[in-house]
Length: 164
Ligand code: FES
Image (cartoon, rainbow, N blue to C red; front, top):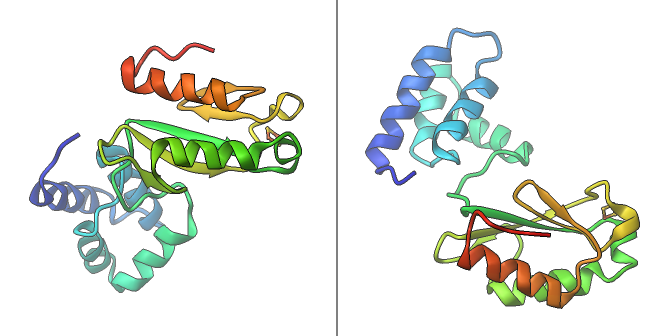
């Protein structure tokens, strides 16, 4: 979604107005803003804080505490290389470095074209087949650098058509 800053602020204000009377309203508001925009923009923070009679720092503190909340626009695709022990024993660290180099970004960053966000993950429940990688909702096992290269190329060539 490509939304202007003013539209983001307006949407945040609308969400806050609708949800602020709920008990423990901050989390439902943050979830709703992120569901609508894909992240929680800076412009939404003072709006949320003012309506809930909190400080900006308090709102930011809650956003920072929960890893699922994002403060920047996320890529069209999310790539995660498992960092947990079983995958590490099978070369996940080297694979993670390869993926970072290939994408030209570090962990928690998004490629400049907005195609891919690279995030860490700690176990994908695929330990016996490590190193494991998740791309959007699909988990891949025994991922080599060559396989990662193929998967990443498919993301840029055919965004909705990744095969295992
Ligand atoms: S340790 Fe990587 S999938 Fe479990």
